[in-house]
Length: 171
Length: 95
Image (cartoon, rainbow over all chains, first blue to last red; front, side, top):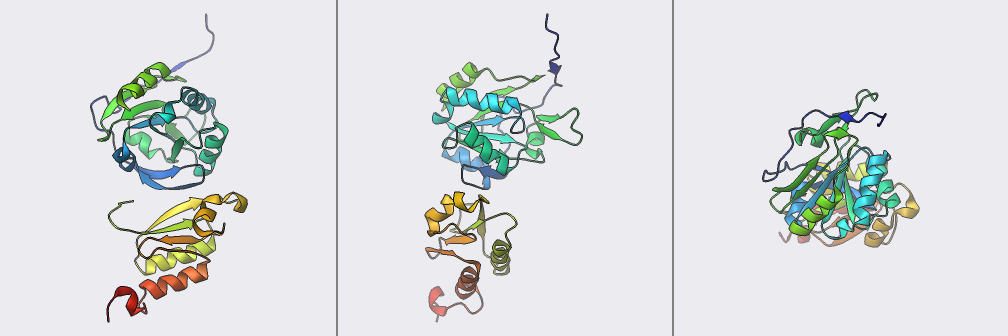
């Protein structure tokens, strides 16, 4: 019998498969610089895998990028992350996870995008800090959601096989 | 960001006063521009070196004229001469 606690998260009201994901603009960080870029600019180029994760440095952020990297997902589809971390921290994550060439990360310190997507996660023991609930969305060129997964427990990780299958089907 | 007109890209460093000087002139002249923020460590700013040949900021790339330029004083002079009240009449093709 396990003797640790997995926290149940409340129901989320996130965009479902077939719905249109909200557009947003935030600084988008690559290995060398960052600039304001809208999500729709990315989807105009093709399907996008949108990965919401914990603040950089927390182990779930490390695990999710290691897994996506090891499966070669960013080579198959435009892959972007979102967390509350600053652009400076994002540059470090890109380097440390070895995804500098393939992944870009949005910086959303006030978690406004989490509110737009219905995936806010106010953190116990870190007063005033709300971040993004772990979530993965695959969006097509119209920002229509083709795959959606949102954590219902904390911590919880996406089923990477499901993500890989969705990427194979829609990318 | 809108992609509907060619714009000026400003390579800048957060809290760099020389960059803010250029920003002030861009705003005074009501010029659309995009900000690209770069690495504080001078030795890591290869993205700037690739466009301007130097790692210093500010640097601008003006797609309207094809000009790429470093050094805030030079940039300010260029912007005022190209887009300001005293702009070179030849630049606009107006007598």
